Length: 122
Image 1 (cartoon, rainbow, N blue to C red):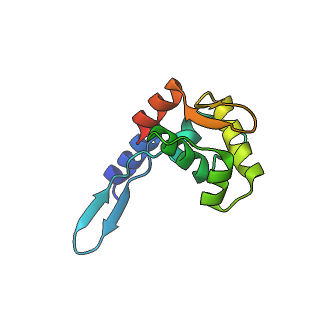
Image 2: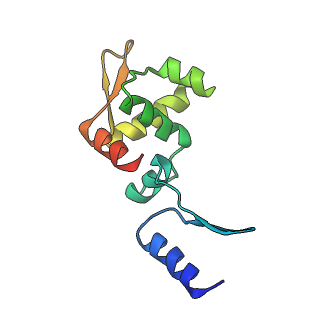
């Protein structure tokens, strides 16, 4: 591998961007990936454990104007209500979402910080 490719990879890592993909078939191709929410979570918020793809999807749904509740999201992802509550609690602690309504009718929506974070990373 040439030094130019190594310099490109290093520049991407230094700037917290996803590694480019180099393909050598009948042509030499370089594929640049967009940032995605999951990648950005890992780099921006230093969480004890990695965020789930589900958390990024929930945040993106809220960004797109959907109002969500625990039962609906647990059904969509085929996981327990407890798992979804934990995901929502983590997002709430990061001030990316907020809950509205009573404990029985609790819904979630995105905060200004959450809106800014998603719009910068999709």
